[in-house]
Amino acid sequence: MSNSDHERARELVLLRDVEDISGGDAAWLASHLEGCSECAGFAEELDLTRRELRSQPVTASASLVTATQARVRQRAAELRDHEAKIFLIGISFCLGLLWSAGSAFVGWKLSGWIGDRLHVAPWIIATGLVVFWLAPAIAIAIGLLAYRPLSHQRRADWLAAHIAEELQ
Image (tube, rainbow, N blue to C red; front, side):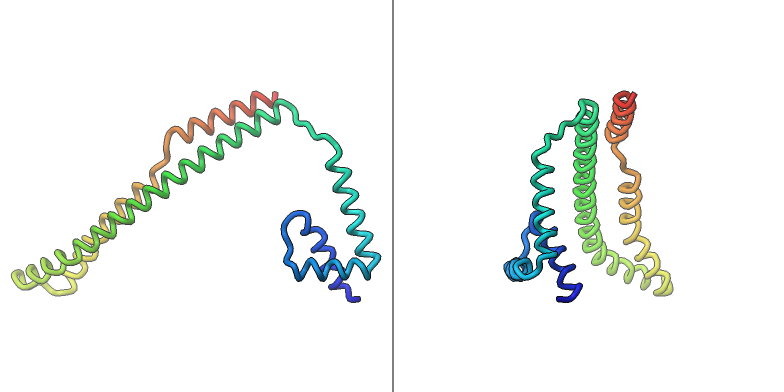
């Protein structure tokens, strides 16, 4: 057998308890373990180690539990803030799309009328129309970049103080 077969078998042995492996991989692994004492020994030692580790009780200190709970709460708050930002970005996108569609028609007709009346060069009219279209998008982008809820900062400050207190 080649070294790559042994490497593949070891990878599959490591993966089979963590995630599902395909039926073909499981069948190949079973046949390989029947014929290879080295890989079968590796699988047996891994199973023995796993059983031994699961038989040992694991306890966490109160400070570790408290710090972990605080971090989980902070992460949940960060995810809520992220969802709020995504919602605002979606609304901004929709408003920008509506603005662009509505202003395209009006801007095109208006720029043609202004060009005819004032005898202005078409490139000047086109430049003004592009700036007119981009101004709302730029203003919304600046607003979204500047948005940071104050409550998020307060939670981060509380968490830092709480963790420092627990570690003392």
